[in-house]
Image (cartoon, rainbow, N blue to C red):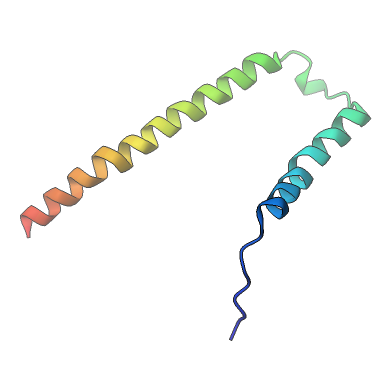
Length: 80
């Protein structure tokens, strides 16, 4: 039988996120690698495209769960 461990506290979660995101980002900024593939790409436009795609995906996801799925479940209940 496995022991149930309590969920981590908010500070622990923040530290983990920092370690997973900020530390590698700081390391990359400190080493300043020259990546040939990124020389012709506007990072601002790439980030804006990523944010737009994420927003569209989120709207579609919410539409599915808020509108499409309840209607389909209600139609299935009426059939039975």
